[in-house]
Image (cartoon, rainbow, N blue to C red; front, side, top):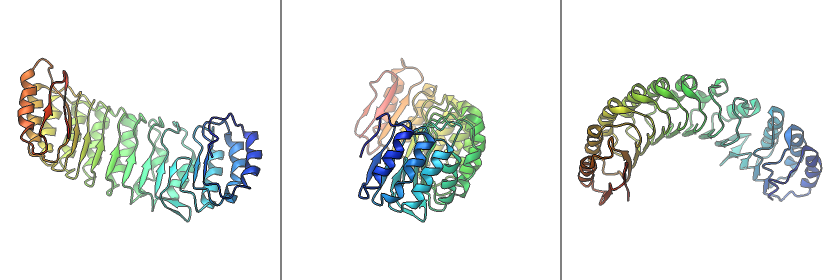
Length: 337
């Protein structure tokens, strides 16, 4: 049942709650984009335990504060059937614990609900997937101190939170303890050079990573050098998104040395990084042994230097999986299947 965008208010939820008790076979309920607020959440959650077949409940943009979220969490823990509540994408739920939590685009900003944090903490031993992207959390990281106690976490998405170098300073030691992490997305967080250096320290420990997205962090030469050195240890990487970081030639050369270790690399995007033509050529030569490579975006340092693109084309055509490399674009190279 989809009741999203219906101008429901907290007073509507008392009637709705009584009505829902009659629908024990209801499996899907979407209440997103209604101004339910905390009072509405309390009314709603008195009926949720009676809807024993409910598997999916969406309530994004409902104006819940800590009290409202606490009501939702209590209802969640009383319903052993639910597989997706408020964006908590849960594949398996038992004893109030979950293995997947997706809290993307909730716009929590710095006001992360304490009840949600406590629920994540209680699920720490089983949690394998955590998505907190697009919440503009900034550098307020006290609530995330439980990360290092999530031993089985395999996928962590912190994209679009603008945590900056201060947030990275708090996040770095937590990340370093996630030894089973295979997917990490820190794109669009404005880490800057200082944040890049801190990230490099943490990445050295994450040797299980197969996917790393660092787009739009502008880590610069010093931060980029630290990250590029750390990449040398990430021999399982299959996807590396490193564009828009203003690396410059020094960090680019360091990355060349690390690339030779990434024998599983399939996708490599490093466009818009202020790389000179010579560095671009060296990167091209470093990619030759990487026979798994399928997709590449790489900006040349000077768009007028056609010889640079020709050199890249000649180099990459030796890669077994690349029958054709398109270098006709004005400012970046794309290769594909």
